[in-house]
Image (cartoon, rainbow, N blue to C red):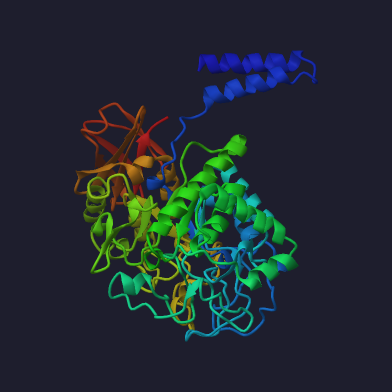
Length: 562
């Protein structure tokens, strides 16, 4: 403290005595003061991250002028057309601090590449590609979502706040064929048979659903670019550039000009040019697994290349990250997904993590049953890998608490379970998931309920998610640490995380009684230790193995007092 006061006084003298034009010394001194006073840097770990997943079109409309493009004006089924959300809308919320206040340190947004222009009815009501999973051109952004410059700005603004960007990518299929969107050439795609999911072959060597052509990801035979794509590039004035870049890519890598390698090049361009931190990969089990290892290799190369070119904007030495959607994968399966006749370890094919479809069921169990199970699996079967947990998502018709009756409990389970947490937009505001008149997963995809934030009930829910999220963000021990129960009633547990010289330890109490309560911390924090409960913003001291709190809250989030 004396050193700090001396530095501050010295800075003051320098400011008053030096002429205004001489700023070099002042800048250096300010940096020295900042370095002397800043808190310990919390290391970022993907396995402990708090990820916010949003549908780009349904989150926030930052630019109403881009709401209609390609004459997408036909009437659609309820919640099956574009609603105006865009990249600028995400950036606005980044700058406003919405994600920071939630303790979010990574944002996953649905694909923003150019979508099919037309609409189609696949039995769920007339639909446009508002969700982003129906690609027309991997090399361009869809104007409904924004421009490449918009995306560049969003990534930069996120990084300035210490938030990573996960780009949602689709490698295994194109968009459907519509009146405006012709089919890709037969050497590029499979249009039959339709997948029956009986074994490995009937899951990978097939088209996922009718009229959703599947890319021939297993083929190594060189193919020509589609004439329609070449004509499009020529009309847009970028034909020579695209062809030259492809030549450089294939010369460098030595890959054959097979369909998957074109797409891998196009997808990793966003990493190379913009510094995207990771990919969330769609429909993983519907492509040959070697394609994912190749995607990860090229994305990692692109990420390191971007870092070399933008050393002043690099957050840290965290490598490129890839999380996959292997539909119905559960953490209990460990490293392998069982197709019935074949097991595949996707963690050995480029994936750092897989989305875990199991927590929504596990959430019916007690806290300790959940936490003990995940702690055990992540430090045994899955050691060196991780999972991304969720309770609600965009295409899971059976989420936990669909009627939003347990928003506080949902936050406790999701944000305190070991592993990466995935907050689905509106989880933190109890956004309605039961929209009348919708068909299928559309009910899960209403526009973000910003208009409800003024209500007391919604604010209480949001505040709870914010408190837990910020605590999780500050403490990698919550998601990546070792779990241990300290007391059964009231329920108290600890988490400890160690990485080299860095050590993080916290204690959490749940289902606590209102008013005065004692939390058992003996054996974890010694007597005389000063702790800070971030939930009630109270400093307490450990006495006789306990800390005593007196507040109306059922949650305590204890960390070492600063």
